[in-house]
Length: 366
Image 1 (cartoon, one colour):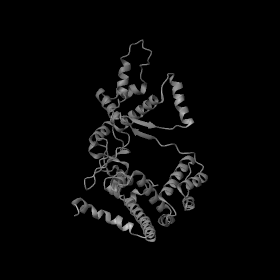
Image 2 (cartoon, one colour; image 1 turned 60 degrees about the vertical axis):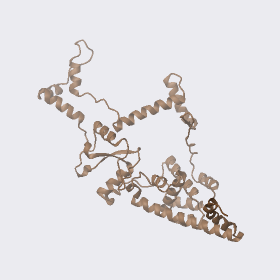
Image 3 (cartoon, helix red, strand yellow; image 1 turned 90 degrees about the vertical axis):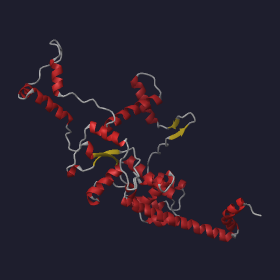
C-alpha cells in the first residue's frame, strides 16, 4: 500500500521518468528545441524591456531605473539584469544584433563585454565611437567565446586595463573587509599626501579623512548641515568701527559707502543687507534653510509614489524639484518643492511639459 508521502510526491517524479524514458535522439532533439525556444523568449523579453524603457514605465511604477525594476520585479540577479539591459540597448543601436542573439552566434555576455569596452575606450580617448564602428565590432564578435572576444576587443581598442572592482565582504565581527587595487600612479597620490602632511599616516586614515570632508560638503549642499551665513557689509562695518583706534585695520569706509548709508535710515540699511543675504540671485535658486526642511521632510529619499503606492527607494542623485515649474511661475519655496531622483525628476517634467518639449533635455540613454 502506498503511503501518503509517496502519493504526494509521486507526481514529482513523472517528468523525470518521462525524460529517462526518452531515447538518445529524442533527448538531443528535445534539448535543442528548448534551447532555441529559450533564445526566442530572451529576444522577446529584450523587446519588451526596450518598450518599457521607451515609455519610462519603470519610473511610473516607482522605480528609479530599469535596472531596479528588473531586479525588484522581474527578480533577475544583478548580473543577469545588466546583461539583458546591455543587450537590449545594443539591439536598439544595431538591428542586426537581434538575429545574431536569437541564432546563438552572439551571447548576452559577449555583447555586454563589448559595450563595456567601448565605453571605457570613449572615456579614455575622449572620442565617440561611431554607430558604424559599433556595428562592425559587434558583428566581428559573432561565434566568439568570451575569452576570444576579449582578445579581439583588446586589439580593436587600445584602452588600459580596467581597474579591479572593489570587493566588499562582511565579517562575522560586524565589520566589512574591502579589497582595492591601486595602480602605481594612484598610489603616488597617497604618498604625496603623506609627504605634504609631514606626519605618518596609513592609507585607511587618509581615505576616511577625505571621505569625511566629502560627506560634509554633500550634507551642506543638501541642506542637512547648517551653513554659517557670511556677515553682511553692515555687520562688518560695525565690527570695524568698534575696533580700537590703534588697531592696524583700516576702519575707514569708502566715500561711496558713507554717502550711500547716510542717505538711508539705519533700519533700512540693515533690512536691505539682510534681504540681499537671503535672497537668491536666480529665480531657480533655493535657500539653504529651505533645502534643509525639504530634505528632512522627505527623509533623504525620493518622494515619488506610484498609483499603487510604491515609493521610489532611491537615495542617490536626488534633486530638488519645483512642483509647479519655474517656467510657469512656480516659486522656490518649501510648499512648491519636493525631493526626486534624477529619473523621476525627468518623468515629472515630461508629464507636465510633454515629451516633445523635454526630448531636447533628456540625456541620451546609452
